[in-house]
Image (spheres, rainbow, N blue to C red):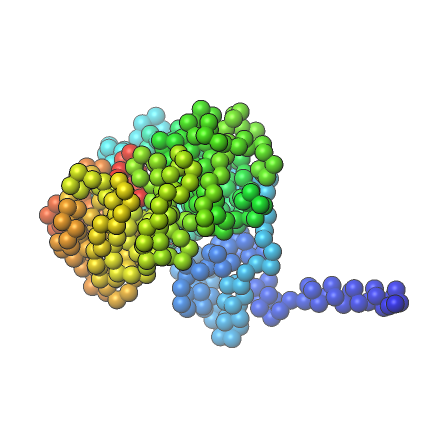
Amino acid sequence: MIPRIASFSLFVLAATLAHAQTPAERLYSEHCAGCHGDDRLGGTGPALIPETLKRMRGPAVTKVITNGRPATQMPAFSRVMTGDEITALEKYVKSPLASLPRWTVAEIEQSRSLAADYEPATQPVFKADPLNIFLVVETGDHHVSVLEGETFERLVRFPTPFAVHGGPKFSPDGRFVFIMSRDGWVQKYDLWSLKEVGRIRAGLNSRNIAISKDGRWLAVANYLPRTLTILATGDLAVARIFDIADSDGQPSRVSAVYQAPTRDSFILALKDVAEIWEIATNPNAEPVNAGFVHSHEKGMAEALPSADGLFARRRIKVSEPIDDFFFDPPYRHLIGAARDGSKGVVVNLTAGHEIAELPLPGMPHLGSGISWMRDGRRVMATPHLREGKLSVISVDDWTPLATIKTEGPGFFLRSHENSRYVWADVFFGPNKDAMHIIDKQTLKIVKTLRPVPGATVAHVEFDRYGRYALVSVWEDDGAVIVYDAETLEELKRLPMRKPSGKYNVWNKITFSEGTSH
Ligand code: DHE
């Protein structure tokens, strides 16, 4: 038996060792924690965790530590740290957190701030059609530019939280927009008064957001913690938090959340478990009667006050985890991608089970899928992240119809009801400067644009009438190029800081078939 005094010393030694900082942790505490948080979960600076940093590929993190970030408070550390220290620090911030962090309702509520100077306008403060304006996310310096849809004049340029990801979501009347960052911040912006309304940190590492059909609720899909946060859109207050776990209690990240307008529900893609969740956003939603389990069931998280009967949830069991969903226009079916990137799985949402499998090798990016009518049949197309091709599929019977060879793997596809063409980028590889224009009927590439040789050219958005197509030159000193969507001639070039997605209010609120939702 160990004498008491010795066991006490061993305890102290173990405790000391447990808290002894490595050199990299010491560097972090000394130089980074003040802005990025003791726990690396962010403060005035962004979270420094692999979930956030993995989108910075190659030596990007080393470069930021060494040189700082222009026009931000991030200083250059090249004079303060040696090269080896910077490498050790980079390794540390890219290492996983020791345990899964919590982010309670109280902490979320504490992060909520509403702008003191915000006054709602009674009409738009500009003359242009408020339903035809564009939002351009400029990831180079974390801003959004708001453009008129006729003249492409910039109405305003406002700062966003760090690293916006996914499409902003608009209230059904197009008046407000909600923007989410990878660090879980949700910003509400009034597109009539051109003023920020407020913001809240709904998660610690988040994927995307969806707004309910009636515009009252905003769902935030989180990786950290393993939750879905539902906010009231009016004042951004927390309405409900769901802990995400399958029926055996296995927790899961939420890959994405989508609005299913015809079903009055949110559909959740889960990363780690073989289930899809549907959450009703209206107590009278048709799916509520189709096997929903009420939300006070065991396993549901903190049940916060909200209107009775809201947010009833249904689990749809699938044979393996699937995510990255494409929905058919009536939202009766979805196709999800299997994890190994070899096939698509079709799920009938009404019946609540899988009905077909499609061979889709090369990692289909179904979230970018769009659909249109061809020879009297509805077809959908999806790019692939690992192969230079687009797959075209019949939505009537889920059979592959054609493969269109491209100059490399693409990320985004776009069209419009009034356009003859599909625009497909080549995001990856040496031909990232190419933009293919594809005839929707012949499925042939009719033109390949190369507006800035060598630069990444990606993501397209149309105006509400389908007359213009806006393309991003996805570089720090980049641009948005406005094309005539019929003649394919360049009309205007607007300088922008690494513009990524562009979003036309009308196309988004009407769920245009040419856009991803
Ligand atoms: Fe995205 C949308 C997932 C990497 C830019 N991306 C989406 C959506 C999902 C998704 C589920 C749909 C959400 C929505 O709009 O509501 N993205 C993923 C990934 O899993 C992936 C491959 C890895 C990851 O790191 O998360 C990924 N995405 C990227 C990027 O590296 C991109 C190019 C740059 C960036 O900003 O991080 C990128 N994703 C975008 C954009 C959209 C998007 C611009 C909105 C597209 C739209 O037109 O609606």
